[in-house]
Length: 467
Ligand SMILES: *Cc1c(COP(=O)(O)O)cnc(C)c1O
Image 1: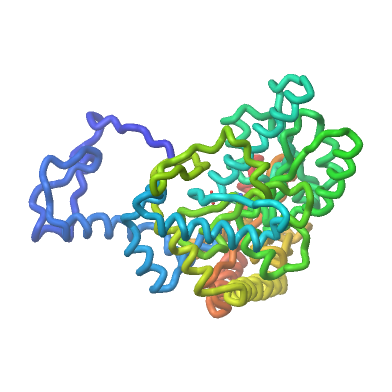
Image 2: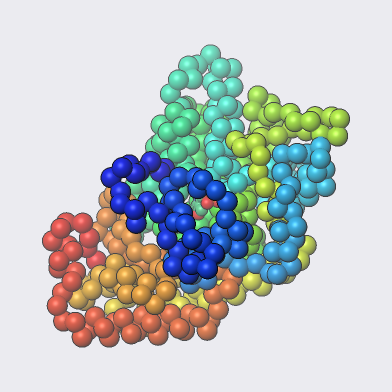
């Protein structure tokens, strides 16, 4: 978040100072809120102030909005706290952490079926956003190479993707001056398809992004169809437009739940894949991965060397220093769970997601847009034609009173009249908790029934929200 400095001269004492009521035994002086306190305080008091302030944050376990891991085993927590002091970039000082990162890259490149013939490569990142930047940059540089080889100008690169892309792709385009060619949604189609992709490609297209598990509906985009259409298109035109798969969530779901689905390096034009270790990779926030099918896809120019045991270690990253412990935790999960463990957990999430979407649909006013059968994420809306006296936003608000965080939002342009609620099922959200949520939804429906007055009318009259 971008924060701005407050004008302290316009604030009263109360606003400028933290006044912890509990702390009267130890804290005699008020503590400034926006300036460095002039003196020290006891560790215990500082802990109490920060700890108590954070009680107002939502409960992570009831957070059905986030894709990010909210629970890890005690052993994983222990390993993480033992390794908080390791800086990932100090390859020379912590060669074993570097070794573990290397093993994770190997594990993922096998999981994503990188061809045996080539030499896959990859790196850890702070998350899928950084990984997306790296994948996009490799595309831009490779495209420039191709254009220069043909004596063509390189001043107007574009990238083809759906409006359903996560904001990191819009950032990538803005920061690296790429024209984003966004495929709009249509009623009933909330993903991209091969035809719409090909329509927007030309010689300035650096690549296509396809998502395995969109944040809007949790659907997989048809990577294989896009690959096959691009194969024909590239053959016809002589271009070499590649695909990057944004597998932020799906990269850790599809290999376990849909092993037969072709979406990864089994497809010729898929050159790079990003995945979030901190989503269905089951690690606490701060780790993602970028994997290339072959070293040839990663231009040398982009790779920097850092000192490593007297030699040079190639690195590709936007950050320099970064915690090493999340990589350690990723490796812990790989060892601890193996293929079977990941499959069991992801399957359990999927069962809860399909159970919950099915039950919600039976409640009457709801209809599912998706059911959690791709990644364990689904979106549901109010039935067409029904005239309930509440909106999805009202329901989201009501559930929040009980601690549940279930976001409601409208779809992007072209489909803005569709408003949905979305539930992300993660490990730690049991069927039992799903039943508790269902009870609370039922209670909210009763409450709205009793209310009579149409709240939705009020909202749609502003022109902002319709259900
Ligand atoms: C979460 C997400 C991202 C961003 O990933 P971070 O790991 O949060 O940086 C990108 N794309 C998709 C599809 C996502 O779900």
